[in-house]
Image (cartoon, rainbow, N blue to C red; front, top):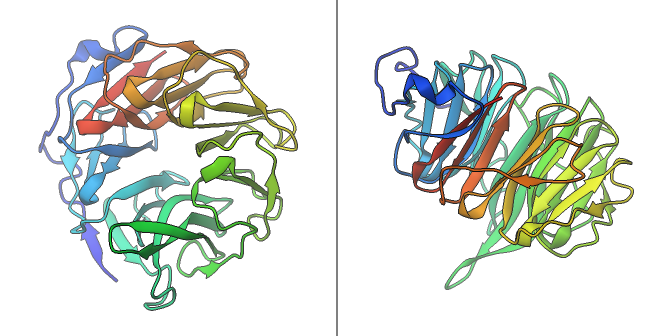
Length: 327
């Protein structure tokens, strides 16, 4: 097991600076970049302590709400696809076929084994998203790839489940071979996964079994967010925004004039939600996702990651862009 100690967590290694006035008024404002790499993931465990991650194994931490950043060396080259904390101490990140776990709020990260070497050979596993239902039960999703002469192609979906907090994992058979991008839990039993070709899957037994839901679209869906067992949202290609009020038994497309690909949706409470996507797109809803209004994002860079709390928010994207929000 490989362990990384984040010695710089409370140091003065400042890799980005934001003026005190950035959070002085409501709205989105540009923050200085921690590093000029594509950032795809952001997660804050409270209004001060958070993480950003992206290409080439890049990971950075802040303990002052994003005003300053410090690099965290994981000594990997794989792109980090997601960071997730289930409480202030227990966190997970997935990077290609690798997973790291922290039990001390990110001061140290330990690489854990998701599968035995050779399990999927000659196929290559890639994990994109992770969530936990409770202290023990979690799911990680992605796909199995085949190396061709010119490219990697998706040949099967891949879903792994843990019942011991991430120490060991076993594969769950899925009713689709479609590439899966993201999942979300509500409570300890209900979960949803979205993927390519409009794929939506749902589980009511903590991810043990899954059934397909009719999305009404063939566009790729990159992100899903549920507020409770009934109200949920999914976003994806060509400005696709889907909404359900019955747990996904039926999905309705929300019509906007936006055509950019949308990457993330996050509701801070029952009414207020945000979406980010390509070309610096940021949308906001204050009526449970029925209508969306475009926001000023201060950037034209693609935005890939989003994290919202009731008062603050952060979005990250191409070329190390970070933008912050205060209500």
